Length: 286
Image 1: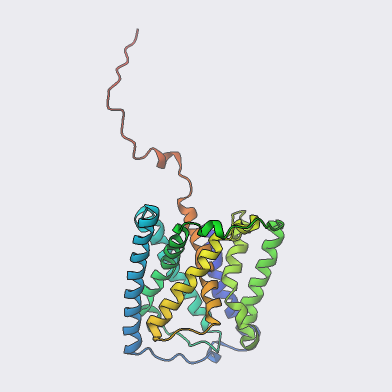
Image 2: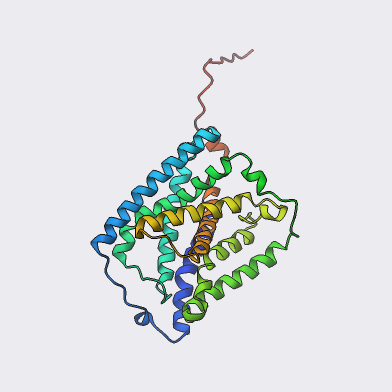
C-alpha cells in the first residue's frame, strides 16, 4: 500500500514538471497566482461547516436505514480517508498550476481549505453508503450483461501509458491536452492496483454489478454541487458534473487502497488483547 501511494504521489509531482520543461517552458512561465481574500476565507469556513453537518446527517440516515453508523464503526478508516483526501486535493491543486484555464490556488488558500479537503472524500463515501442503504438501489444497478475480462497486466500497462502521457502532455500542451490531466490520477491508481494484483473499483462491473460505481458517481455530483453552491452561491456548469464524477471515483479508488491497511490481522495482533485463562492450571509430576 505505502509503495503504491508513494509512486502515485511522486508521479503526480514529477511528471507534470517534466512535461513543462519538455515544452521548453519553465516554472516562471506559469500563470501568476492571486492572493486570497477575506471573503474567500469566510466562504471556505462556511462551506466546511455545511459539509460537516451534511456528513453527520447522512451518517444518521444510514444508521436509521441500515442499523449501523459508518463513522463510528469505521472511525480509524475514515480518519485515514480524510488524510488521503487532503493529500489528493493538494495534488489536484498542484495540477491546476499547469492548466492556464483554471483559477490558480496559492499556499494560503490551500491551507485555509484544508478542513474542506478533509471532508470531501468522507462525504462522498457516506453519501454512497446512504444510497446503498436505499432498498432496491443496488439491485436496480445490477445487470445480467457481463464484459469479457481483459488481461490485467496488459490493461495495467495501457492505463499506465495513458496516465503518463496525460501528465506529461497536459503540462506540455495545456491548451490541447489539459482535459486528459484530470483523468490521470484515477488511471494511475487503477494501473497500480492491477500491477500489484489487487482489485480496482471497476472489477465488479465486469460481472454487471454497477451499484458501487453508480452510487459513487451520484455521490460525487451531490457533494460537488453542494460544495460549489455553498462556496459560490451559484450552481456549477453542466460540464462540471463530469469532473465531480471523476473526482468521486478517484476518491473511491484511493479509499480502497487506504482500506488495505486494515485488511487481515497477524496472529500477534489477533491475540494481543486476549485475557489469560481465569482458572489457574497446576501440573504435578507423577
